[in-house]
Amino acid sequence: MTTRPPSRGNAGRKGSGAGKGRPPGSGGKPYRPGKPGAFRRPDREGTGPRTSALDAAHRAAQLRGEADKRAPWRPGDAPETPADDEASVPRSPRTRAPRNEVAAKAFDAPRPRRTGAKPTEPAVEGPTRREQRAAASATLASGVQTLIVEEDEAEMRIDRFLTTRFPQLPFTRVQSIVRKGELRVDGKRAKPNDRLLPGMSVRVPPLKLDPVAERPRSVARDATDADFLRSLILYEDADMMVLNKPFGLAVQGGSGTVRHVDGLLEALTGPDGQKPRLVHRLDKDTAGCLIVAKTRLAAATLAKSFRSRSARKVYWALTAGVPRVPQGRISTYLAKEEAPDGDARMRVAQHGDDGAAHALTYYAMVDNAAQKLSWLSLKPVTGRTHQLRAHAAHIGHPIVGDPKYFSVENWALPGGIQNRLHLLARRIVIPHPRTLKPVDVTAPLPPHMAQSWNLLGFDASRYDPIVEAPEA
Image 1 (cartoon, helix red, strand yellow):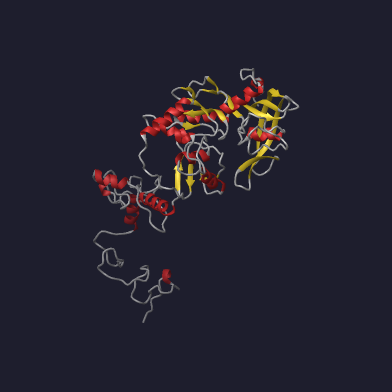
Image 2 (cartoon, rainbow, N blue to C red; image 1 turned 30 degrees about the vertical axis):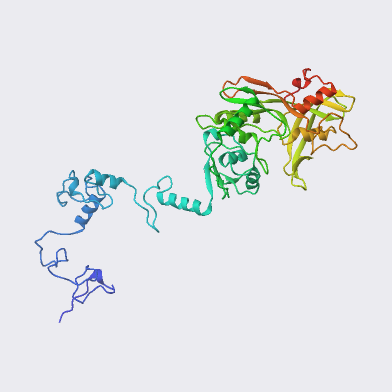
């Protein structure tokens, strides 16, 4: 009996199927005669179409879009396939072209992301509806609000921005929110005097606002308030007006303050619903020129003039004693300090102290009475809180009638002079918000200061030397 030697290709291969009735080169699979494309024995010549690597290579070239390229085989071996027939080219389900307009829109629409898989489509810009609903639910649950600064709110202080958006919010609460860092501007902490730019996002914490009672406004009261404000007007046009604020009338509301200029301005609301807006502030007991803007755009422009020091202000004051230097310059740092009774006042601080800000004032003595009282003309360059009152006390000549900064020992008030703050915002010159031409307005002496001027023999029409003082 003759033994056939094993095939050279399967020699030493485990599981090759040699000797088990499996043809060589079948990869260990059993031989199944009659199956299309199966291995055929060399002694049996097949009559059907051959399914070989040639067909697989051609199909792969078609899927890659390379069917029109020259195949790496002989031209006679490749089956005839129309290269220009798109229908004959098989497509992947993800790249199959739509056959109608509705399908085309669905085809071009971005596909939703799958969890755990990398997105194959670019992310859609902007929040989705689900994200918007989630953000709205979070706002309702937490009370946190995100406000966007409008164009006409540009360069507005943060505390004034909050006061404008939330009129019923007390100003002390506004300062507390900013000071504690509960308010964020573009994700960062801010200071009350920081300025806002259009497009900035302001994150406001939950606010416990008392519901505003919808009480009907009294027509008679509005008419009375409007007549009162019109009696104070020193200058007015379509964009702004200058009021002669009387002594004792607060500019804005506060703890226990019901009647103030900001509230009275409601009576002057125009037909377009715009209420006149405050541009700057004066102390409650300071009389004189107070600028009010009629439109939001005018308010932003006028406020910018104050920040850029384009506005020129002159104050008159009656002070105790006579300065050794009749005309000079006061430059200090001022910081706010809390008094035991809760009433804040300013103190002279050192550079670098917490909350200290530079304050600059020019002064000139216009006249004096018996070396006991002086008529000072003051020109503030900066606009710090209580700046003139603190500076006058700093040089040893506090303003008469000042309950916070007057501390001269053994000083008696002369007879006939009322114990009221003798400080007047005498004159203001500011560029017009629209024409940019200077608007020059002068306020008269309030009744109690006019009485003192008459008693002391001061001439209010006398030339004011502070006009020629430097601007910085």
